[in-house]
Length: 81
Image 1 (tube, rainbow, N blue to C red):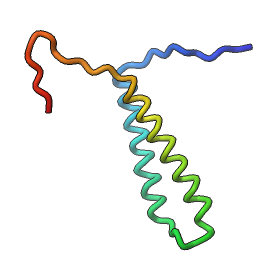
Image 2 (image 1 turned 120 degrees about the horizontal axis):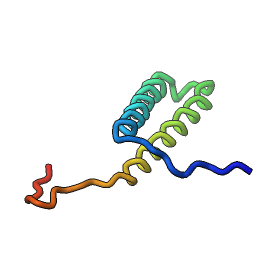
Image 3 (image 1 turned 180 degrees about the vertical axis):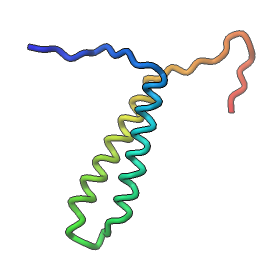
Image 4 (image 1 turned 30 degrees about the horizontal axis):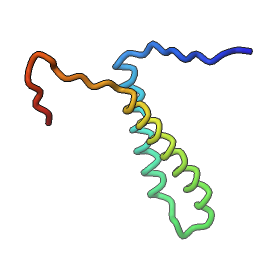
């Protein structure tokens, strides 16, 4: 039985591109959702699917963020902001 590849070789630029694509997809879904009326029963299934897609994209962005390691300079004082 084939196994999943659990090791990926992605650069920081690759991850940036994936994150930007997910954010752009989220904006498109948001615009589509806003165009649909809550009062129209014909739109309810589409609204549910759009909201599920939005949630899945946001969760993936969160998982990507949680895997990042943020570095601070060790030789000098770090001033955040």
